[in-house]
Image (cartoon, rainbow, N blue to C red; front, side, top):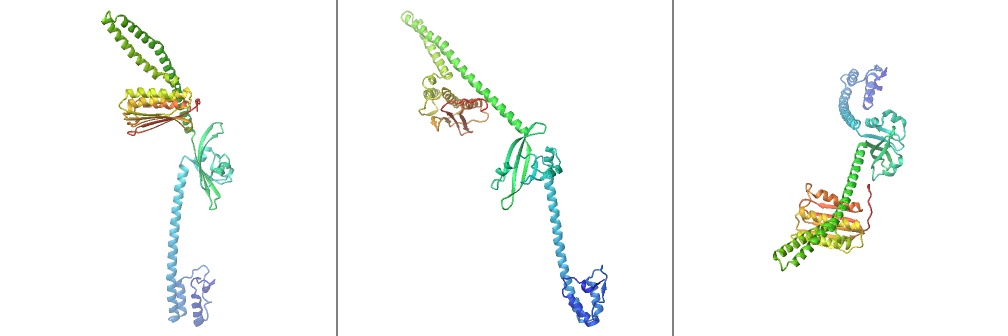
Amino acid sequence: MQPVTERIPAENARWPALAALAAAAVLGGVSGIWLGSGAALDLPVLLAVGAGLLAGGALLAWGMGHLRAERGRAAAALSHKAELLAHSRAAEQALQLREQFYHTILEDIPEMICRWYPDGRISYVNEAYCRYFQVSREELMQQGGFPLFHHGAGRFDAALYRAQPVVVMEFPVQQADGTQRWQRWMDRALFDDDGTIREFQSIGEDITDRKRAEQETAHLLEENRRLTRMALAIQEEERANLARELHDELGQSLTAIRAEAECVLQINRDRSPTISECAGAINTVAGQVYGVVRDMMHRLRPALLDDLGLVEALNELLRQWRSHRPDVVLEALLEPLPPLPHSVELVAYRIAQEALNNIAKHAEANRVELVLRPLDGMLELRVRDDGRGITADADGHGYGLIGMRERALAVGGEFHVTTGPGMGTTIRTTLPLSHREVKDGD
């Protein structure tokens, strides 16, 4: 059993005084009023006790009014607490739903995710991580040590710092069966307020198929480049052979025909005007054919390149080009050059020749500029036109550009094209002043 005065709530600080005053005035104390220890003393019971003590008394009326006010304040406080509790429960449920949402995403994505501490202890792995390494989450949590993809803590400590918290790495991984696979990991460091690394987050994927495709593509590209260079070398050799045949066979035959026609012309000048006229015609036609053959030989194998060097050979090329395209303004700046390897001179000549041929056939240009000069220890060749530019479907440009690029790369140079519809085309190549043989795979 417990006295009423001992069970009055602490927040109703005035009630003990009221109870003591009532007891002194009527019964000499309220210690005789008892409630069971398990009963709750509420306001109706208390008011009933007060009514029995001071029926109709002024003190009881004052006490009841005071109790009503206390009851209203208590109800408001309880209502506010209930409202706060409801909001708290709603927020907690929303947080749980959000956590479930993100957890589902992390577990369902195909990328591997691992969270771990600097000492190597794993704090979280997703299902994809376990599936890839064929180990359960419980085993990973219990075994300790660094994650299975890890190659040593130093790689992270040296690479991750606050100014650059993310590092992406690709590396091969030896499998248990001896096979090699490739992985790509994006590692992020998570820091405390004082800048200390608190935890690492690593997101990885298997990129073996991509790496194999890249290697195969690189192999095919190198093979294609090797074949292209071989074709260009064979082409250059065949050009030289054809130029030699034209000079030795057709050139000499045409020279003999012209000599015979001149002889007939001299012998029959007074005897037979008709024969002389025919001989003169033969001589003229033979001379025209010889001129065509000479131009062909020059295009196939420019003799001036062997005899006088690149600048003189290009001057002759420009002279011929102007004669065929007098409607186009061709400006050239050919600076004096140091002695060059024949391979470099030939590459520069062929690139200039191909560029001018493309302009004549496709560009519809009004102005062309050609610059040849030594620049920063290299030989620079630049050909620019104001034509219609090179489009993706331009016939004939593809192989020509590939040939120019491969020629430049074959001697250790570089080749760049700047073009676009309506903006003209600029071809720029830089070649070493000394030849560097480029082997397959360079």
